[in-house]
Image 1: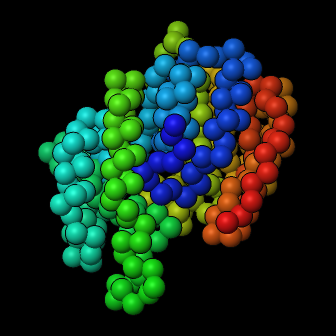
Image 2 (image 1 turned 180 degrees about the vertical axis):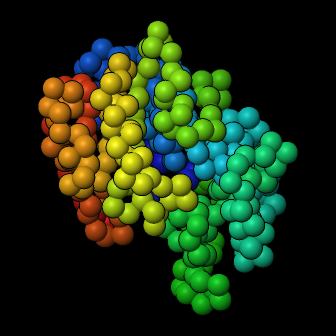
Image 3 (image 1 turned 30 degrees about the horizontal axis):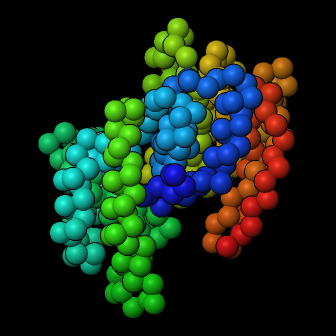
Length: 284
């Protein structure tokens, strides 16, 4: 069963899977296609599909390197695995794949190169942040060397496992809000949204949100007819944007994620009646 993604991702939430499964079941949305507009590690959507809570998933990703990676997993996994096996995890490769950070849009002719770049940088950059420097530093003088998070056998195992879901996964390169505004209201969707953090999004992601972007997302969800669940960093501005008790349910429900031996609070918000958070998350 899927518990981890091949990607290390700031804010990835494998611990929330059982909670979301409960929300979908309790509200009668079994059989809905799950949409994850900020795919990232995509652990939530992929897990819901594998558990047959949702028959299909649509992953939306604005970062072209992460989008290309997921395309490779579901469309050309063997080629991706061969590239992983044949790639030395060293600074020469890091410099080579870092050049793909200059790509702001996806290029079909470079699908495998960009997909491998997304994986390589995610697994060799500090904290999985694609725009960060290399683990161990450029001089590789740290005890944590470039390859310490790039365990080929385990990554390949995860990719092979996920590739079996290829017929049930659609990957879309798009801005999340652009995609959401084009959804057909006649279809049965469940949205799980994990947007860039309000406070530290700029430092964590290559594509982050300014205040107006967060405001536009709140406006969309205020009028949204689909069932949705949203996770955010617990910031006063987010509480301000989601303070309509007639629309936003349980906006004071608190979740936690463990990251580098610190615990950071998050809030769970929905247009459904969702249960209180009952899980305790311990820092590593």
